Image 1 (cartoon, one colour):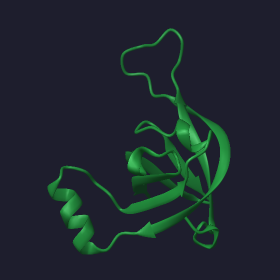
Image 2 (cartoon, one colour):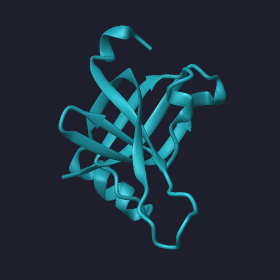
Image 3 (spheres, one colour):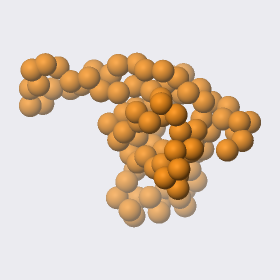
Image 4 (tube, one colour):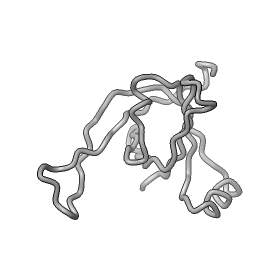
Length: 108
């Protein structure tokens, strides 16, 4: 992956659940480290195809795989300035621990 494409800075946030856990408790989010990534807004055709698969996806985020991005799960959210992306799918491309591809839905 070429570093010139990684022009956006995102901050990882993972949920922290209250102790003791109650049934409908909303988690708070702990702010983790930042990483560089490429954020691609999906077109209408790609969104329609994703909708057929049962997922709401508005953006595809690509980054290098490292100790920060290895912590991303479908419970995580990513923050870029005032924009928040909720992760719907995480894929370690070719299972080589070099590149990670994230499908996310932007929450307004």
